[in-house]
Length: 477
Picture 1 (tube, one colour):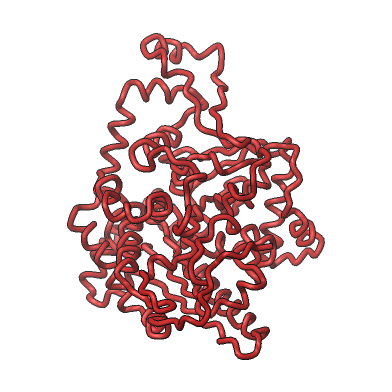
Picture 2 (cartoon, rainbow, N blue to C red):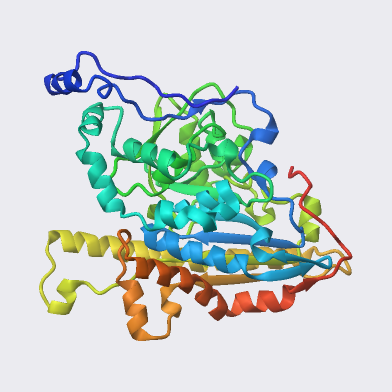
């Protein structure tokens, strides 16, 4: 049986300051963060992976959404896109359906993870209370009050309970109802992939069972709030979220790692990922992983996760994690929507002509690397999805429709009016005004309507004939 636990590592004796505070607040000093549990013998049906969690919708369509980082700004824009998809109708097998119900995967990073996780847990409840519970909350003020609480100050003295643990606890109670991955992506809801960055190995870390297998750990009982916190943990404001790396397991998907290391294709992403994963297999040398904001390695949340060899057992070309051989023959239209809330505001020191200080220089250097990486990731993801579609068409059975891939990227740069575009680019990541939240939610639908690939998908897919009636019921290998 798999379960999560709170590992008690409260140091004794405590420093004098800790003792004084604990005398005043005796319940606070030994607080510990939530760690992942060692892998148990659970049924495959409970595993959090493509095999168990892809919704049983029409197999002729494969719809992927990717929500970028960007704090509340990204969460609001992603929410607006989901709202627009809720209002978009298709006719499949002579039955009307919402495009929202045909979404297969949502891969998300940082701010986008909040929207994705909430929808993956609660479905249409997202449109009832997500704005009040998350979007319209003043998070800097909320966090400030949390830190000012003497009880929390006492708890934070423990070396095993940090600011990220405190925020994850708050998110669990106030936003995500203390749900775990056992509750996520059930029934008709899409498979949600939450992504962080593994600081130990400079890799994207996806909260899916295939990734946790390498830690000899189970994911089902791990709190969703902690994963979302890991995905959005920006240092140094928050400490990394830690995961335990256990010994005693031989991951079932290890063979492709060994194969990639033996091939030594040094420029291949498969080799780089395999090299990092191989270090997990030595828990004595890496007993803990430290996770931070997923945007550090992939701020669009699709190339490093949805298209990672981890998710597909090393075979990205066949999407072996998401498709059986039978399903690959049935898919006809692949829609990928990237919701990118990245901004490019001018720097005040640049406008004034002043020389940037040390902090300004560091921030601008980070932005340059970050923005360049994001642009390259989007371009490469587009190339890989299109190449995947072309490879499927080369082996398409006679008489079967060819696969069409529609790749749509939604960004603030699509806003034509310069003043409006500048306004969106100047928005912060938190403490947005009610007017800005409303504008971002509306903008999600507006950008979809402007997207030529998305509109072409609607034209080609408004009505699917009733000859097939296929649903995703096969089991991947």
